[in-house]
Length: 221
Ligand SMILES: [Zn+2]
Image (cartoon, rainbow, N blue to C red; front, top):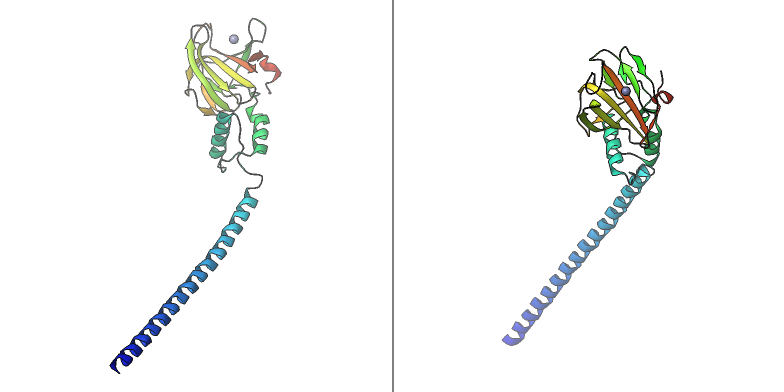
């Protein structure tokens, strides 16, 4: 008799234990289902955010340019002008062609007189001006080099990040070192009489694709 009671109790305990296990696993399954549901909702939300981002970025994706240096300088330029610093293909071609990169600004800020025109043996334009007169960048660009030699005295060379480069010679002072980004019209030095020069003047050269051109063909009054 006692065995029957013990067996019955054990069976009851076993059944209760099985029921509890079943209930626990059912609960777990419900939790898993709920989490999976949440994952589906989250994924949908992430997808919609991605869609929105893709829409917003459409047409303003950064350009992959071969000329990373140009891109860097242009990004810097845009940043300085309180833009987001991202250059689009459209902007890039616009900026490349834009006037600010064309050396058509008279490179002297003050009184001057043309003392020598462009000719084969003098592929430059000379501006006679008082010593210390401001010499300004004829166009936006990056200073390629600053050096001094016996003939040209103190020289600043600017790369305008397109087919143009300009040279400013016989300077008394150069304001910046090479690799400096300068804006069109920004002072870059002072008129001087350094090198082979008999009176203070600026010797100004414009190079197009590495060849000298007559600055007067491009300069605007
Ligand atoms: Zn000259």
